[in-house]
Length: 196
Image (cartoon, rainbow, N blue to C red; front, top):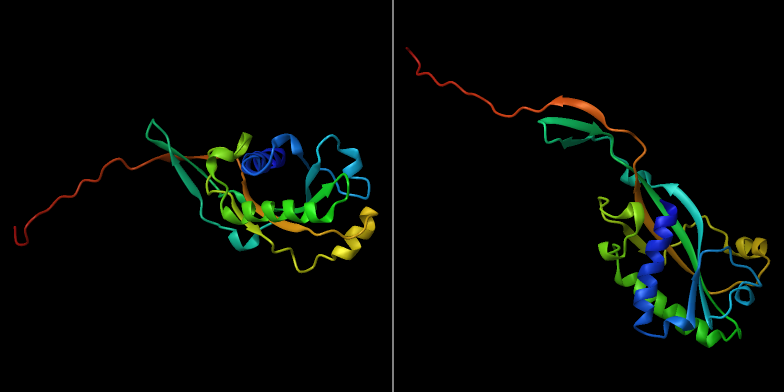
């Protein structure tokens, strides 16, 4: 499922960025960024990196209401709602010639694309994310308050860079459906007049 989210984001950004620049001028990666990142990803002029740094349950969206699904034979299946999970990416831009102006210009384009879509449109969804309900909602430019970015960059062995934080909330089915029995097909109501 997480690999499908990676592919979904790659599809969204590739299509949108291709409207602004030549697709051979940039490359999208999901590796951990470090000092040598740009040198390891030729031949693209610009390397766009989406590093998945945090996965956690979205407790605010937790629900206890079971979902009932009607079957063609008049019976029904029921199952608990999917668990809603926030997948947070750290997005950076790396140029082989370390041209900061070019990096910031490209990062600005990525920022506009991500902010344009509060929910990921269905045409970009890949793999197990296709046909899922509810739609994948997103949150751009709001990193968790507890994240210490200076420590992060120190661990990665690099100097701090401009970053975008981007979170996508996905629905994860963790329970198998159970038989709910036959559904009521019709009701019969008898009326009679008082006094008879």
